[in-house]
Length: 139
Ligand code: CMP
Image (cartoon, rainbow, N blue to C red):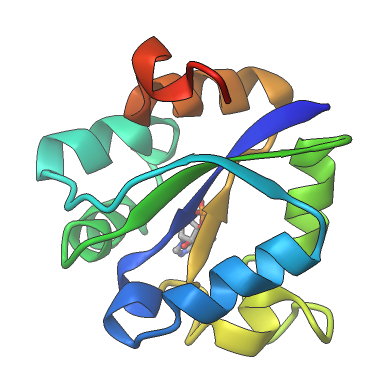
């Protein structure tokens, strides 16, 4: 078993899609090991997406991710990172495979409903960004 980080993004939370997305993830075989609702500050969102700092979409991305509450969660499964990436689909919902979370629930490439870690290394960093050891005890 391995772990990864997902974030149900502000667009999906505001549209009342969080429950359906969580159901979708559990039905796909993920166990939720920790979860919270939080509203990111600009400093937090900027740090979380620091790898994209030079990209033209960085400032709009930070603005969007701070626009309302989001739901970070630790998900566990065999091969959790690649499996979650497959389950959520391509960044742009127009290009996402049928039945994926983004095809079903995302509005656009910018407002795309869910984030997922892209490597085991980044998953560990991103999990520790939101969750303490205490949050994960017994998980
Ligand atoms: P996410 O998986 O959270 O990681 C980076 C985010 O940047 C991505 O999802 C998109 O929501 C957002 N983004 C906005 N525009 C682009 C773009 N042109 N290419 C890639 N990601 C983009």
